[in-house]
Length: 181
Image (tube, rainbow, N blue to C red; front, side):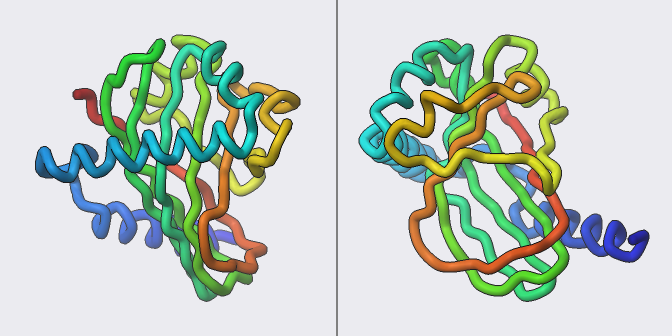
């Protein structure tokens, strides 16, 4: 088990190095591209589950990752960049990094939406305290799914597959970084 933990840490470090140091997009054009992607992802998520709009309206804030790429063959990882909102106002950008080790093969992309129940949950995210372990559960978005989702430790997570196929029984987790606007 110590070996698996070591590999997971090494993978996470490699992903962070590959992702680069800057959480925010480097240019105004890339910021605009990310914003367009985030708005398009929100539109699609709300269209796929009309109950999500009310969940977002009731949340203190949210982070939207319009496109997260994930792949693996024994060792895997994922990376995505998104925008963070507090009470409807954009407050910054975020990176999502994931490292896994175990039985896995393939690649996929998906959108991920994290709702924050209150200021404390959003502050935990901003300060780098939010990390999802392998046993964290995300709701796969389909009509009506958002309505029955419950907050766990102040967050709700929704994912929507976009493309690809991945078979996975692996250990790892997601971590996040935040940069204010």
